[in-house]
Length: 351
Image (tube, rainbow, N blue to C red):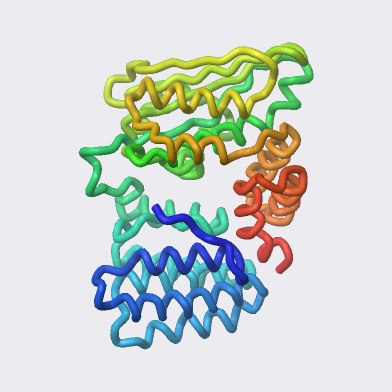
């Protein structure tokens, strides 16, 4: 998949341009698609500048075009939903109406939700998709690739490490998701979609998620493989991380990998991803290996701050989420995941 490039109007705009251009169905329509992409980039630029009404006007004007396709309309409604959401809580209903319009066109027409949507919009989309019976969408490549879902890791540490590493388990699962998504022969279920299902059956808050329940979740998500993991630390010198993959159809453990050593969790994470991928017969090309090595952070402090940002993001506390993502990025300026989350939540943190 083509990567979003940061330009003068930011990562969000770059993503929207790339996304819209990817919707082109016919070469002859390329110039039209580029024009739509440019106008949507302009609308998102208004979003980043907190000029939500101007952005809505720009996006709404595109709907008047005679040559707008169904996929174009989804892209336009996606931006309008985000712009209305940015205006505040009193505009939630209007924001959600655009999600309904997108679902009416077809909830599986394109891959949703968008990465640049804030968490509440993403969760609302899961609700809309569930009601349409499309929480898991079929893929043209279903016969060629496996779908994998990753559960939040357990923390079996003792003493002060039980509390100190409490947030980190969410971050580690997030990194596993991001790294597995770099394999071309694998489809990864979004972390927040897994959380959505957990919340739907009221298990997330209690933490009482058995292996059998998780397998049922995997079936609801259309996943063939569920990944479970845990970390254990009892002192400052040694820790252990264990990861296992379970086949949803049979509940059989098909692969287990583990690492022991000094508490360098994110070096362990990279190594375990590669080892688990090998046991699952996934293709690890030189390009994929380079992408795996480049992502994430080697800073424990940055990773912990990022994990706290995820915690507040899930609670829709965007001000605190942004602050923690910003602190994580300040700790490690190569931490691209933290920078992306900053770009998403900065407008909402300041509006």
